[in-house]
Image (cartoon, rainbow, N blue to C red; front, top):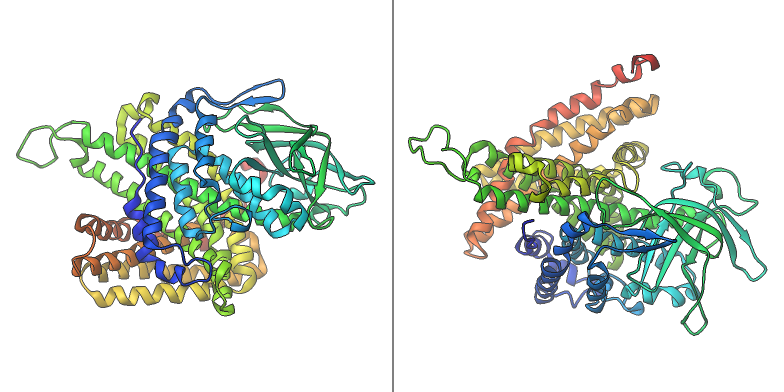
Amino acid sequence: MTEYNAPITEMEFLIKDVFDLNSITALPGYEEATPDMVDAILEEAGKLGRDVIAPLAQASDEQGATWNDNEVTTSPGFKEAYAQFVEGGWNGIGFDPEYGGMGLPFVLSNAVSEIWNSSSIAFGLCPMLTGGAIEAMHHHASEEQKAIFLEKMVTGEWTGTMNLTEPSAGSDLAAVSAKAVPQDDGTYKITGQKIFITFGEHDMTENIIHLVLARTPDAPAGSRGISLFIVPKYLVNEDGSLGERNPAYCISIEHKLGIHGSPTATMSFEGATGYLVKEENKGLACMFTMMNNARLNVGNEGFAAAERAYQCALNYARERVQSPVIGSKDKTSVTIDKHPDVRRMLLTMKAKTEAARAISYFTARQQDIVAKTDDNDARATADALIQLLTPVVKAYSTDIGIEVANDGIQVHGGMGFIEESGAPQWLRDVRITAIYEGTNGIQANDLIGRKVGMNGGAYLDILLPMIKEDLAAAKAKGGVFTEMAEAIEVGLNNTEKATAWLLESFKEDPKQAATGSVHYLRLLGNLCGGWLLTKSALIAQAKLDANEGNPAFMKAKINTARFFAEQIMPTSSALKAIFTKGYNAVLECEDDWL
């Protein structure tokens, strides 16, 4: 498998230049996130990813986690690598210093997470789930609960999980049936089974803190009757030491298409002691904090896998010699990256990956504003953008991860079908990301419903003027930038037309829009990706004009944006047409026609 090298120059360019690190460090509490610190953190994270975690990816694919008698042994090397991860303080980069974190910006911790995910999605899943549990507890747990659990979780000494899904309750959490019976001492006894629990059991830490959705005996039916509980693997004594084993057991792990190094547990709670978070029947609101965090992070997995698949394909294409270039007088065989169709595939992989990354980093920047600004208007604007773009980050990035990994196999040709090349693993590993944390169809329905249809497009009224401002700047630049801006403008106009149809039709029959919601999400994702690539290209040109930075990198940024405008943005017209006109055959289809 190709050695992984984190795209640090790209990360630094986005954080410092495109999303203006100076404006982030101006926020109270982020003053220490200087350019030098950003450089140092990314450099050291890149080394840990390249030298320690990435070599585990293929090995863990071949020998995944194993289960025996309710206990899980992780893939060889995972436990030692995780110990190095904890020793370096990597788990706490973006978390509150009060609990042992570094308190650094989300946009930086997002980049660092990309490194873990590109190195090994299976390994990166463990800190990802822990981070989501930390977020939920930080916002909703009592001060006493935070004092007991948070510091060890922030440092990574203990890991966290989210226990939502049951055999009869998948995406529909209203069907959750796990029971929570109150006890005289204020605790609850949790019984029931949860499935698909990522790192629900493992040997990398001494304790695992489960967040579990369950129902109290007199809870109302449906989602209004769900409560959230903290259920540790080992109970914690008053002095912070570990007490008795809580009866929350892993009774099996799944045999999966990919991410073999990540144990996906079936958990059996057999009267386990649980601690109520917040109030009874308020669990779903608490869990959504964790789920939204996870959705952004799963999106990160998507473009992180795409980056690794691209590196693998590019390395192979630069070494594989096959045939002379079509139309060339020189009949000497060349490396396949010289062939137009292969070069098109590589540029497609690169452009899609960079587009998804840019949307994710932009959204992370909004998280920083919400977390730290004193300006209420700025916070409201940033929060609206987060609400709008969370389903886009999750679904667009993971769809792209699958597409790019698939293209990576095609670049390899016959070798791409051979496990030894490393290319198939990225497709198998990333495939789950379109299903995690609400399938991409659910994300698309969330986008057309709660994020656009139900608020009259108010969030888009914030985003679209930002896009128009940058397109005007690109037009004013002239030349290829005008061509880019015009291509993005077509996508913007199609998005506006599709949105107008959505707002009108949603009132009468939301099923019409739901039929093509995934096309609307792709339309908006392409628009955002094209916009941010064009914005990046403008900044890259300014760097070239000022003789700053690496000229080859800056020219590549401009060319990637141009490719996206030329070969990806034209699909916006088709996406708009499918979304607004393509519902009849679906809605009029009778059951026996399927």
